[in-house]
View 1 (cartoon, rainbow, N blue to C red):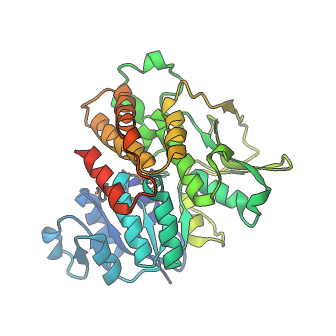
View 2 (view 1 turned 90 degrees about the horizontal axis):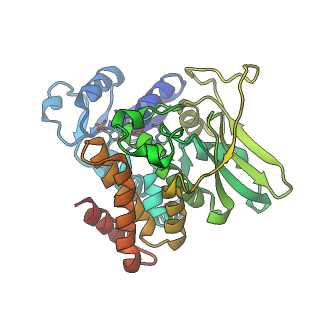
View 3 (view 1 turned 60 degrees about the horizontal axis):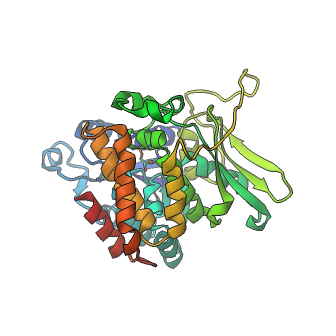
Length: 369
Ligand SMILES: NC(=O)c1ccc[n+]([C@@H]2O[C@H](COP(=O)([O-])OP(=O)(O)OC[C@H]3O[C@@H](n4cnc5c(N)ncnc54)[C@H](OP(=O)(O)O)[C@@H]3O)[C@@H](O)[C@H]2O)c1
């Protein structure tokens, strides 16, 4: 029996991970975490017989669930409740401390929290090596690239290609972005996801994160990591080889598939998807060159990625701040870009090469104030 811990069980990825695990023989959810959604946690506590949960506050749960232990930090949860793999499905910059804790606890890391690699990809890779821990991607594009690359020499690869749906506002030009509402932005055309990542798709910051994530996962230079607009989200990622051959991965727009593949790799089992992907259905595939004028945050992601040091962390933390403000109704959609630009410009002459984790946590703290 493989014992799984799901950090962020109350979120979109967490919920789908539970469904996937219920459909798999020999896998069991033994521990989890949540931030504020105690109603949903209560449902899981009733349903799953969790041995341990990391929460902010649990006094009112202790009596109701005497067989579950509650912990107030991730390290205690990982130390006290044995597990084989941990899914990091936290959202935003909070995911970094969890990734570090998982690796230091020598647990296999199944990574949905892409922000961990954007903030501190070099450090995470070093920790993985030092602790002899395996990390597998859950993000659909990276799962696709991982599947396409499997067993092939990276020396044979010319380009990694990451597809982008264009997000909820893709049919609007920049002049039409003024005054778009929160519900406009959350109305993603192809994927159903948590709020923050849905906003990140509309700004294309999400694709910027994915470029940086791909660099750290697969070790390719940024010039070899390309993005392409693909409105159907049928192809999630592709590899162009030196001889010109392109291998791509297709599948339903459901995160259950990449979650399951990370859990069962390299084996494949039947996956309980909501929709089947059938090549005999009538559908078209469209591809367009990425439009960096329409999506300046993606151009900025390449810039901060190439600058390195703390600049990707600045971009990531500034985005967390801005998206939180937008989702609370405090700022307009286009102000997200202004906040990220301002923070990146402010830190340009304060960059630190080879930052430590403390340098990165300091930047996150400074920006979140
Ligand atoms: N959703 C997708 O389809 C998808 C696809 C690819 C990658 N990802 C990535 O996966 C990660 C999770 O995304 P999501 O869409 O599942 O997010 P989500 O629905 O917002 O869920 C986030 C989870 O993190 C918890 N959380 C939030 N802030 C926290 C904090 N400060 N400390 C501890 N826990 C905290 C939440 O707890 P509460 O519910 O209790 O607040 C929830 O369980 C993100 O990095 C995202 O980019 C998501």
